[in-house]
Length: 606
Image (tube, rainbow, N blue to C red):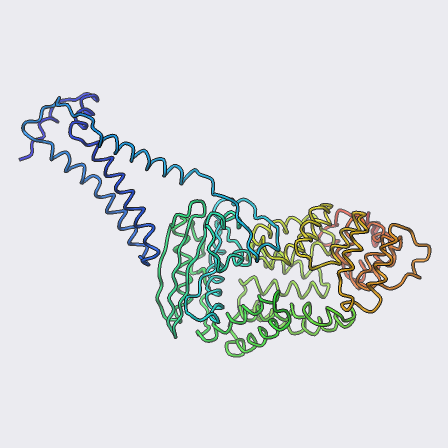
């Protein structure tokens, strides 16, 4: 029978700790802590390779935690021998010092993981080197969903693994307390094996999600893991092996599990889900994902990608007329087509407007159908806002873009569309605020960064705008405009000379270059100057502001720059403000900083 006689007396603290030392309790506790930590490190590092489920790691932690008091109890019992005295001395030997050193090392490593900086800066890869935009420092919990690897053995199936990445990212974006880095930024790192700390720093993300997708017939296996970007520690991982018919349930489960691992509340209303319960059958859904990949490839494949994507989407909505995301994407494909058409490159302004109106007529019913089927889907409202923007229905475009952002405040296309609208009507300060927010979500999208350069330039940050614009080298007319506004006419001319002459009507480029070489000056006979078409911005630098708006039937964004103050004094500018409906917008939504009302029906701008 075990005797607890030594406990019968009343001990002082010194006697109590002496007794613990005599029974080697400190030695056992230190040894247990060091060994338990080593076991956790081994299990944590082997789990991804062995595809262990998340509960396996949890089980190890529970067993190690439960084993600690058991080990101390056995230690106490083992040393309760009849011959023990209360004041027996135990000498400190080398093993004690080794255990103390090991315990100190464990504590130091834990402190380092929690407090150390997140690592060295990322080295830009070729895909990202075109853009020098840096992501802002992460605030709170921010997540980047890295492209899931396609391990099906068929490279043509990349669209499916990319689609899973998009859907999981979209589901997490609905969690109010999470900031999700948009897909175009995360996809810069597709197929790379960079250090997680470097990727997190580049994207401004505190956490990263990656995984793989294997599809075989009607079965799909998805592996996902959540990693803390600061130190690379895996916080959660799981495997899902299901039928394709369960694909939306898998997406929902992954998003919910990640939010749970981060201890972030979902914030959903009763009956609401992160992934909308879609009725699309697996074949229709795959076709939709393939079309989405084509539409998003427009930057590299241009018009063909858009037309092929639109053709696939037309088949999708014919097969499943209730599939709202396909209607919204079809509208976007129609909207983007004119900007990639031959008429945009080498046609006249009238030809381009004709083509644009033809595609707007196709885009509008598709967007309306998306909104009708899914009133909570922001993409349909973004498409409608764009349609009304092109038709100069500024108030309706404003209302729709506001509605889209109320549904999804971090929708990149929605932020972009509203910024473009605000720049067009002279609300340049507010537009730049949205541009900076968009930059935090999408720091690596070339088109978004080009438009951010425009906003910076309008707000007087010319050097920053030029630096950003020169990274793309795809808009020489815009860069020339920026150089000229800073009085750097020689650089403006050199930039214009990089424009292929066949992209403009005969003689326009040569005339623009000849005029700009004489800047700055004041022309006594502005109407005698040669036509320069879309390069009419050069007129203001040769003292002919009344000619700047010759090419336009609406207000071009650049008139809000300080260099174009003389243009804002012309009668042609006033005519466009009235005819394009901008005055009605100002009266309803507020006047821009540069303009103010004069009387009941007039205005003036600085």
